[in-house]
Image (cartoon, rainbow over all chains, first blue to last red; front, side, top):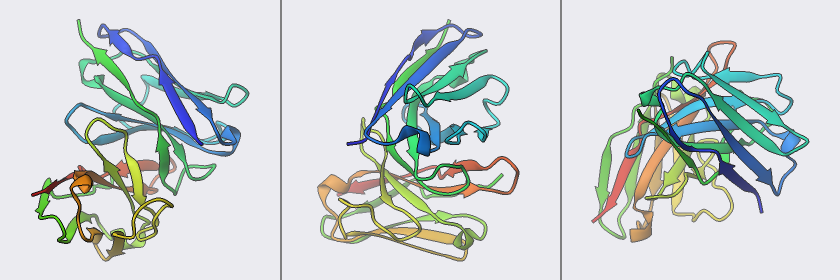
Amino acid sequence: EIQLVQSGGGLVQPGRSLRLSCAASGFTFNEYAMHWVRQVPGKGLEWVSGISWNSDGINYADSVKGRFIISRDNAKNSLYLQMNSLRVEDTALYYCAKDRWSNQDRGWLDPWGQGTLVTVSS
Amino acid sequence: SYVLTQPPSVSVAPGQTARTTCGGNNIGSKSVYWYQQKSGQAPVLVVYDDSDRPSGIPERFSGSNSGNTATLTISRVEAGDEADYYCQVWDTTSDHPKVVFGGGTKLTVL
């Protein structure tokens, strides 16, 4: 069974940093692209960032470009999101998700992690 | 950037057919994916590549895609189908492909 177990959320002040983690199991992690998607409670889904199987392809939403950094450690079967210069509007439930393919230009996201809440507030 | 438009809500009685749309410029040329998100849960894929179903998804769920509109159809709707439904495509117009989601449609089972 494929599992994505997330950790690292919490309450943080504006301007500070936070790192999210996503531990993968049940599939060959280094063969698939991975993504982060966020959702403001009660609102829709917003794609945040994606990374190819070998980290050669990395993409960001305009809303986080220059502030967030996606990375992966294939030896540890783990995906990360380093969030810097956090803003109140970054407050959301963050999900990691597995891509169907190894690179990013097609395919679906399945499955998704359980989500981790990030709250940016003073 | 590529925009997907979904109606905010759809209501249907149990046993009837629910249809929700996803509008985008020439979306028929793209592959469309649909996700179901029940309250308090992570999204789950219900349709991929316009009209295919993952294993474990009932045949009641189907999809189509043509022109500027993709459609998710749920036949013989059950109370357990009540959820938010999101469409998704890839925006590959730049060197940096991006995942694009529609705003979501809340399906209410009357």
